[in-house]
Length: 202
Image 1 (cartoon, one colour):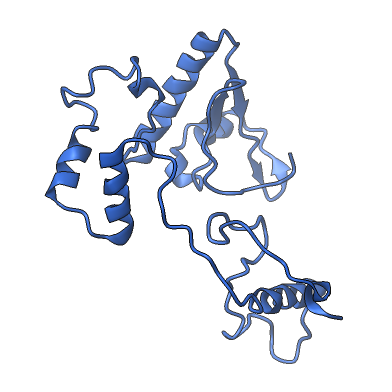
Image 2 (tube, helix red, strand yellow):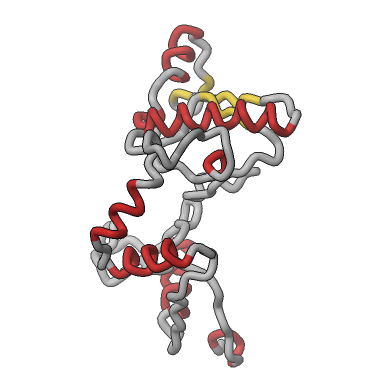
């Protein structure tokens, strides 16, 4: 009956980075009014969620790691430090401009180091096109066959059999499909960035 078995426990990680799949985050405030109807008892899952929350609230010491350790470029590291604090200056802005596609300093995205750089796009459509081109490029570079995973859309739990409707759905912008593309090009060993947990079936 003693939390954590009565021993000291050290947690490592970032609770705000990824939401749990089909579950409630540990930072959920259960003091707010519940959606459960008045007089209706809570489910076993809801009870476990509240128990987990109460355990987390018993953490009595937090150490925040604030020093940037992955960046070797000293000037860029200082920029990231100021960006984290919301204290960027004109020199930071000018440095970021040198990393923008179209500037003389970025000669070609096919050459090092830009062919391995992360690209920030302001529109989902642009991001999707860049990802598709990167997948094709990675397939050629690694000598692998490009694979394409096709979304399996359903309507009320049943597969869609109308070929015209299927084609229209697959062509929708992923900004209209909760950022899930209809066509997902994939190459073994290609680099990817995980931004959110959507499913754990695989």
